[in-house]
Length: 257
Length: 261
Image (cartoon, rainbow over all chains, first blue to last red; front, side):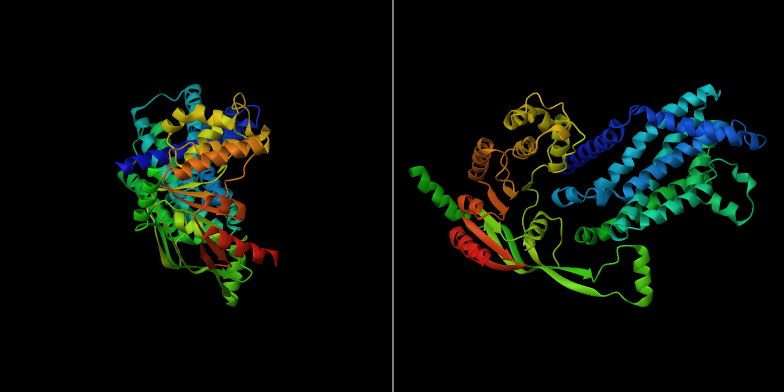
């Protein structure tokens, strides 16, 4: 009883903190929340302009191909880069409040997830514009997003804890993200790469998620059992490792902050 | 008058049980000498084997108890270990050695303006701040009017806190913090002496109400006046060591003497 009450209170805290993040982000810009919808579309337009010619043979419907990858990738980077600094940003709060500091990390990831919701609006509109018909395999996407959430949360735990001790993680992570992005086949067809790099891409959790979503939305294919297993394994695995590391370093974080 | 003696008896009985028991608490921070704040530095030093640690005791073998119904004041200069003590009592830090016995579910830590965001409106901040302090949504819905009334901020709540004066901010903070029903163990972290004179009287009356509502109170302050006026016991911590425990007047007197020198 007390436990469920506490959970409810934690959920309330996360909602309030998330509302703060969103309001902060959008009150200063004129277009407000509309940016979240517009951003992926602009990016899609730019990339399509250049690459849809280049990959005309290998990818049909390039804009959707790109957009599918883009929204998942943006959600992941948005979540992790925001969560990276969350403990340091909320330093003052951390020392004074009674609830577990995991909630600060959860808040940033949840904020990214809300943003994904806005992306999806843009995405749905584009699906219609480019004549992608609704398929029952699309029902599979919540599972993909759920795995993405777990994976991002796990990564966020690790990064947030590390950033408390090492300030340069931030710069390092930016570089890693760039590399990671190129290995996720967001704007090019994965099949065109050969050799070891192909192996890297195939085992890249983000590529797996992106690929599954593309198949479900664009081609009406279900993910293979192996892919589902990989997705779940990455999601739960990284989440468990991340929260374990975070829990272990909690006391040290408090001392350092 | 009869009621008074009954209360004294009650207090005698209550003395048997300590609400907050701090036993031989030592908090040691391992601080690297000119700490590596980046991974690069850390690695460079690891390769050169240059990790030097310096041990630093924020608290050194501190013990005291706060009995049920007592109003204890924790006093000490800045950096004396007061806030470390507070964090240990509230459970944010785990001491290196020693023990703190306290029922954390009863503890309510009262601080001002925890997480006020200048970009949000007054109303939004009430909910944000309230959530952080541990109020439920239902509770805030129900108490919202009282909070605004107490803070005397009718008509300002839809404005951004950025445009509030500092007095308005602290009034709002105080109103939110004290909106709750009296908790069993109340920790006040420098919350007295807020706002202008009129509001200060109002707020002190409110605190006194809470203190006399029968809760156990721990006040943290570096103002001896606050401790003298409100407490039944004073605990003085200096440079991590316990200097004195006892009658607030005596302890504060000794503290002031040290400060004057």
